[in-house]
Length: 196
Ligand SMILES: Nc1ncnc2c1ncn2[C@@H]1O[C@H](COP(=O)(O)OP(=O)(O)OP(=O)(O)O)[C@@H](O)[C@H]1O
Ligand SMILES: [Mg+2]
Image 1 (cartoon, rainbow, N blue to C red):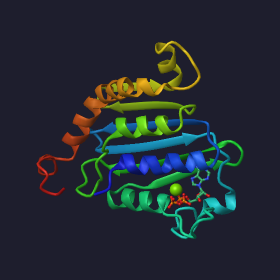
Image 2 (cartoon, protein in one colour):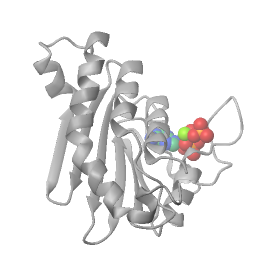
Image 3 (spheres, rainbow, N blue to C red):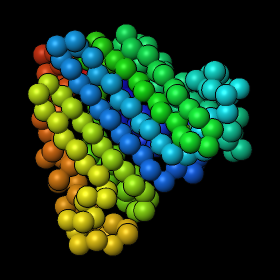
């Protein structure tokens, strides 16, 4: 089963292709209501209104290298398989917000996967990207921003490669309780790998 972190990487690629310089990622888990949501907001060029209504159709793309765009269609399918949906709000010249929702405990809900690793990869490939992460789960929250992180690293506009290992540890530690709550929400059979 495909991990949601990989879908997130796809969304971020869309944002970067649209010229975004800022990304805001939000992950929310609420086990009481059994909902999980993943949101990515960017400041890219936005999606033209005429394209927006059909953008989750696998044949809609502004790609020049091939005629099929699959990222959003695949994420929509993943959400709908788990009693969720995909919503896109976009304003040309301002940015785009994509939200995927899921029933957290649904047997077909894809696992979050390596969120920390995904974010580090994104920043390693795009060292000047401004990224903000807000993760919330039952009673817990973890916030990260490249702006605040750079300050702790002594300023500078980009992120030095030497700090990526430290950054990964910081994110993985901060997100560990979310991971645990997310795995618990998937139920014992899934944790045991019975349906992996
Ligand atoms: N954040 C975004 N900002 C602006 N346009 C977007 C954004 N996300 C998607 N789009 C537009 O929607 C189209 C479809 O996106 P989708 O991710 O489904 O396919 P793709 O990126 O074209 O191809 P693939 O994801 O398979 O590499 C894109 O080609 C782009 O024109
Ligand atoms: Mg894409």
